[in-house]
Structure formats: C-alpha cells, structure tokens
Amino acid sequence: MRRTVIVPGILIISVILTILPGLIPQTTDPRYQFESFVKYTYTPSIPDEFLDIYDAGARKQYLLTILLPMVLKTNAEVESERRSIERIKSTWLWLSRREELFLEQLAGKYKVETGDYDAMIEDLLVKVDVLPPSLILAQAAIESGWGTSRFAVDGNNLFGLRTPSGEGMVPRQQGEGMVFRVSRFEDLQSNIDYYLWNINTHHKYEELRGIRSGSAYPYDPVELAGGLRHYSEMGDEYVEKLVRIIEYNNLKDYDGYGLE
Image (cartoon, rainbow, N blue to C red; front, side):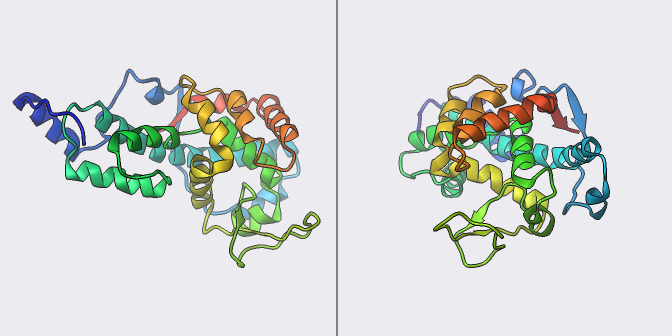
C-alpha cells in the first residue's frame, strides 16, 4: 500500500489515469522519440523465397526487413507495461485494487516476488524493459545463421531457444553429455515475444538486467551485449561475436525506429 494525500482535483486525474493505464503520451520522454517509422508487417514464418536469394547481402537485408517490425512490436508491448508501472509509481495515492491486481499479474508473468508493492514496483522496473533492436537482430542473426537454420525455417525459432520438455526439435549435433531439444513456435512473432520475456526473467541474464537498469536510455547495445556471456557456451567470445555483427552490419541504425 502507498501514500495517503488525497485532493479532489488530483483524485479526478488519478481516476482518469486508472481507467486509461499507460495511454497518456509522454512526448518529452526519449523512450517515445523516434527518428524513423515503419508499418507493422506480420510475417508468420521465414518466406519460401528467402532461401532462394543468392546474394548474401540481399538475403541479410531481406531478413532484417521482415524482422524489424515484429521486434518493434514486442518492444512496444513491453514498453506499454513499463509505462503503466511508472504511472502507478508516480501517483501519490493509495493503490486501487485494480492497480494491485495489475501489479500482481505482472509479478507472476515476470517472476517477481509478491507482497510489498513498493518492492514489487522496483523489481518490475528492472525486468519489464526493452532491448535495442540492434541487439535483438544481432542475436537472431547469430542463432539462426541469418535465418537459414533448420530451427528458424521449420520451427520459427530464431534464437536457439531450448525446451525442458520432451517435445521439440532434436539438434543433429550435441555436445558430449548434452541432451536437449529446441522449441518450436507458432510463428516468428511469438518467438520474438518469448525471447524478450526470457531475457527479462531468466537468472542467466541478471547481469544484463543490472547493466540496463543502471544505464540511461537509449541503451547501448554493445554495453548490454556484455550481459549475454551466458547465452552461449562460447562465453566472452559470443559477446565479441555479437558486437562484431552489430558493428559490421550497422545494426545500430535500427535503434531509432518506431512503429507507425
């Protein structure tokens, strides 16, 4: 529970904000300032004609073009959740039951301990956040072989995400003593959604979340890449590879994009 100062005018504003959580524009916030815009285009799977593109540069650009709108949509949905949390934090009133339920629902989704609402809000703000599109695109490029891997083509899995269950795709090669399966996804959008949720909740990426929460927005993808050393058995070499992909392919150019 929270603060107790109640003034009629403020109460009216609070009611409006409660009815419309996260929908009040914050035009001065750099999170909502974009240099360029693209329309949302839903591409369910890697198109059949993609693998027929002979030129590697053209194939890369094709992949980036179909993935960028879906990456931006995933980020926008997480940003909307974050905006609602920040609005609740900024109000100097008792939490309404509706706000409590909203926070509890997000806490379940993002694996945050419930109980003290102030602590929940702070923990949620660490986890409910976006990644630079350049970093997401770079990981998709590495993990899917620029969209050509069997897991990407047949399973809509751009990020090599594994499943603990007995279902999934079996890698043709596994390391000694390793037995795992790779998840299948309904479409590319659900794969990107799950990827960001996994980064925001899995204990392996606590370092990345710490770097992010201590950084000013817009986030530096090269700096955040240092928190992904546990994404691969390659460790620091994986981080270096990510940085090379970002820089060589000028992926930072996509970080100023938003959805129309």
